[in-house]
Amino acid sequence: MQRGLLTSLLLLCLPLLAHAGDAAVAVIQLNQIGYLPAAHKLAAVPTDADAEARFVVEDAATGEPAFAGELGAAATWPPSNQRVRIADFSALETPGRYRLRIRGLPPSDEFVVGDDAYAALAAASLKAFYFNRASMALEPRYAGRFARAAGHPDNRVRVHASAASEARPEGTLLSAPKGWYDAGDYNKYIVNSGISTWTLLAAWEAFPQVFAAQDLGIPEGGDGAADLLHEAWWNLAWMLDMQDSADGGVYHKLTTLQFAGMVMPADARAPRYVVQKSTAAALNFAAVMAQASRVYAPFDAQFPGASQRMLLAARAAWAWAQSYPQAFYRQPADVATGTYGDDRLDDEFAWAATELYIATGEDAFHDAFAKRRVKAGVASWSSVGGLAWISLAAHRERLTPRASRAEIEREVESAAAALLRQWQGSAYRLAMREEDFVWGSNAMALNQAMLLVEAYRLNGKRDYLDAAQSQLDYVLGRNPLARSYITGFGARPPMHVHHRVSEADGIVDPVPGWLAGGPNPRQQDAKDCSGHPYPSKMPALSYIDAVCSYASNEVAINWNAPLVYVAAALQALTARQGDDP
Ligand code: G3I
Ligand code: 9MR
Image (cartoon, rainbow, N blue to C red; front, side, top):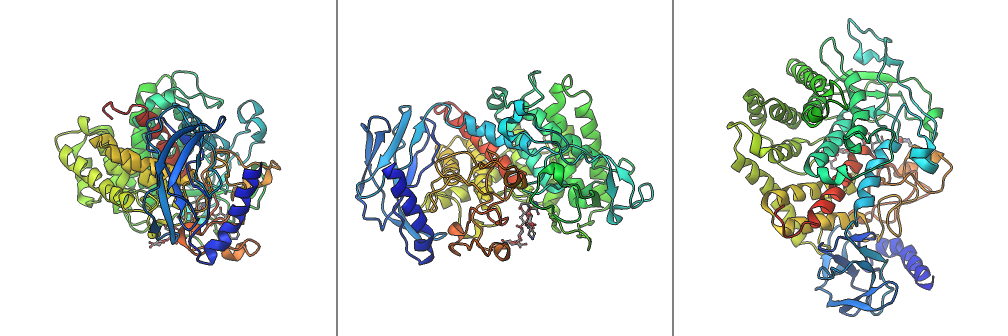
């Protein structure tokens, strides 16, 4: 109790100190869930605290010391302009519940070392997608206290003027139900659905054993296909309806004209529209449908005809994009919701071509990929070239001779090696640099982790896995704000995410399993957050746990997907230390 109070007081002071440019806050920062026994285990200790160099890890119940060590040298981390020292207790492998102690500081949060340290996280971060389903009531037996009425049937959606065609003039009614709400808002955007769905299916392809063992408690499943495949199908079914069968084009989004208020889905009844067909939407759609066609191929009994239908849909969207390579999304004057606009589409062309190449084995698609000359790198909704390379790496043993296995390995490894160097050179032992603190910076950390995991799967070099572990530690508490950024997980999770359901449902706790967007020094929401000023302009401190803060505290499907991936990857790979990855 006393310790809790002291820690809370220190945490309250933290933003003030940070704002004042003071470097130190006397709180030991570590992953507030814990670690797998074989994991790399680091804590960060701000230095100006009058701390000793020696640290002890003790059993949380008995206080018996389990491990002791010396802190590393102090160094400055530019994103928060703080000096920290690192405690490395990787050698502590005995399962248990622990805390870390340093004389002069309050003891750390408690954490576990255990064989299934991330099983609950991997499940909850995926269950979050179920909680964001459109067009379906969430029943208590699946949703527990987060049960809610259905919203957005989306079976009478209007064709917006920007999307009108001869066969479907403005005002035509279409049906495009299901799918996931994008984020804290209730709209559905093809571009962002693309990378989100792809990342989940890539996680399934890489770590099927983790997902096969999951029972998410969703309405579907138990039929020999992993719950992940059923969850992803909810969104794929919607995406398929976003394609105009007359020409293969794909609408950019399904949306209201304005963002809804902070109300429950069933109370958000403004008319919905499909808006402008775009090249970006067609290519994201083509990539995901091609990938899904191969993922679902062995499950034709559970998803009859789906695999074949998705491949045809992918080809049609690809063909449309060849005819309209520059149909960039332009937000119509009467539409104010998310844009997901992107005028650089080399990476989208390369990604779609790659997924079609892997699905069909047709060399023409490989040529279309190679022509775009995209590099491997950390992915985001607007930058998807790295996804092409990850897919090539995952399937490198089965490609046609047109693809160079050596080139694929070199490309992925060299992109990850840059991240590894950043991790090694960082005071906080993180790959994140100042410029990485964009809108959704926490997902940047996890997309970096994903690339590191991919390199580890190629080269088996342990550092890459350790660096990925560090990135997960960051979102779970080894950060200068000493907080977990995942709802329902860790000692100090976000409580006021910009998520309409969490705000409107009358339940104190937010819907669990969601990653908050994270620190973002551009603070684009400052005008809407006058009651909750940002504590600092420093990149890694520019965060507020306030519902007004859509630029630092929203949740989104494309941010949760790499969390699912990384939690599953560490669960699968760390447990097998010593084996070939
Ligand atoms: O274009 C510049 C780029 O040149 C520069 O390198 C970069 C550096 O920060 O900034 C770039 O633009 C940013 C853009 O994202 C691309 O990363 C904008 O400043 C930034 O405002 C923009 O933020 C996007 C935000 O919507 C506002 O449009 C986020 O990436 C995107 O995740 C977010 O998505 C929203 C949806 O629109 C609506 N639903 C919720 C969802 C999550 O907040
Ligand atoms: O709630 C909206 C959120 O989902 C979006 O990510 C964000 C940026 O597009 O916009 C939010 O809506 C805000 C709008 O942009 C400005 N006025 C306040 C709205 C939040 O209540």
